Amino acid sequence: MLIIGCGNRERGDDGAGILVAEQLQGLGIEARIHAGDPLALIEFWSGIEKVILIDTVTTGAPAGTVHRWEADQLPPAAVGSSASTHGLDVAQAIELARGLHRLPGQLRIYGIEGKRFRLGEDISPSVRRAVEQVVDQIAAETPVPDRQRALI
Amino acid sequence: MSAQKSRTIRVDTLARVEGEGALYIKMAGERVTDVKLKIFEPPRLFEAFLRGRHFSEAPDITARICGICPVAYQMSAVHAIERALGVRIDPAVRLLRRLFYCGEWIESHVLHVYMLHAPDFLGFQDVIAMAKDHRSVVERALRLKKIGNRIVSLLGGREIHPISAAVGGFYKVPTKYQLRELVEDLQWALEASVATARWTATLEFPDFEQDYEFVALRHPDEYPFNEGRLVSNRGLDIDAAEYEDHFVEQQVKHSNALHSVVRGRGSYLVGPMARFNLNFDKLPEAAQRVAREVNLTIPVRNPFRSIIVRAIELVFACAEALRIIQEYEPPAVPRVEVPNRAGVGQAITEAPRGILYHRYALDEKGLIVTAKIVPPTSQNQKRIEDDLREYAPRLVAWPLDEATWKCEQAIRNYDPCISCATHFLRLRVERAQPDGA
Image (spheres, chains in turn cyan, red):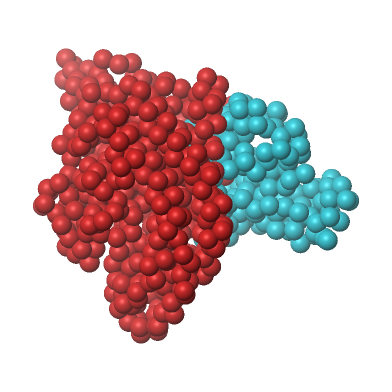
């Protein structure tokens, strides 16, 4: 299993996924931080059966709302969204992987709703609380052997 | 007035450019009455953020301006500061910096050629749609890009926002063995780049040529990355220290950006087409041969054909990386000690999308007093608007949505980069109002 926290910690709430990954690491759970090109995700999960991805999202819900989607249940509007800040965004990288038959067997996405993204801004308090909530959920669903292995 | 059909091309969120932008073109009949392109968030915040910091922090801080070209920011920063302090680097460090840049050019050019620009030419909404019909092409792109990522991670210490580059050298340098491990992949990448150039040459290009002032670095012995004089096809030939005497930044109301112009002349073009036209003779034989094979002769004046030029630069970057790896002996000292001293230094390096200018003034403790950064996209911005002013009237007969798409494609010719520092998953849920799009 692979856990990946995505985001940019220089940009306020965009750092939520990275915070989740760091806190999981603190609990002895292996988690990877990804701060760059979403396309690289396709390589990361190559050959891995189960992947959990944590990223900041903007759907119009209140900041701090936690969404949980399986890859095949991503809202259709996620795809073809015209915004694009690293060439392709995470949703587009997932769709591209699907088209290339390179999605992991199981891909679960935790989306934390954010609202502040300016350079150097602090993370919103509600997003910080959502980070804790997602850490608890992932820790609860992570099989014990995975955690012990990470501790060794 | 009523005889002239008036029409407006408007794109509130430009897709497939690095960051978000907006475009507004107003026409009366075949006459363009207004072009406003808002694509760049200037790095002013970073310039302020750098003040009072020690010079050793500048490479890391500026690398965060752009997720696609952090190497460029680091390279312009270290060279400018080394010039301010009179530091000389080991020749092996110089080679490694070129290799570092090869990695970034590979990543960035592959992303743009295949994922962002090619869908326009092939009539796909995006690369996701393109992948369904051109799966092996997209697979090739992903594999090529991964090789660029490997070079950048090896030299940078990590993939995005690399941290190993430093004023005076690198904190950590690779062993010969580590570099040799890249050879097999790079040999494949060289062949794949040649295939890329041939493939881009089969695309269809609008008949559109402009009389540009091309501006790029020029070095006596090599295709430019980190060094050289700044030259143009209209007689410019200056040192980086003279940059601000010849180029001025103008504030424009409709954009956060500052438009750069050549003093007394106007807009100019930086990036692959400028480098290629001004430095064709410095390309390795492998790259020149492919350019001739695909009938790419200098000067290239059709900006849509920049996709082929990028592919030729990809051939160059792979060939150059292989050459450097063959020659490489680790430096005796990875990083020379750099004293705190007052001084002013400027440097220009060739980011994938064009020249990137940095200037730093340091005090006697080595703290940054002022910093100035002029990124390639702000230098191209006026030129893009000028292209659109000429190009839009040719689209009068097209339906509005297709004309709009073609204008977006014309913007993507420049691979513009906004600030590209956020990448969160942005969803447009059905109930949301699509901004009149």
